[in-house]
Length: 97
Image (cartoon, rainbow, N blue to C red):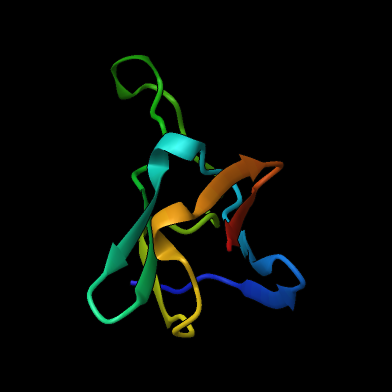
């Protein structure tokens, strides 16, 4: 299990988190709120796609597979009921008022 690279800043409107999720689409990344104000971001990448009937021959497989989980206890003033999320160009952006 790995972790994610995260940038976190506070703005006048709330908190903005940017998380590197290269190769993931929005359906493969999960954002959840746990008790105690914990924000959890997770995702999972499976095996690389094979060829027809397994006839492809791989020469290099460096992209990692497996699951990542990242947890952060948000400040008490964070409104975790109104988290907005978007994935674009391999970056998940979370906005927390």
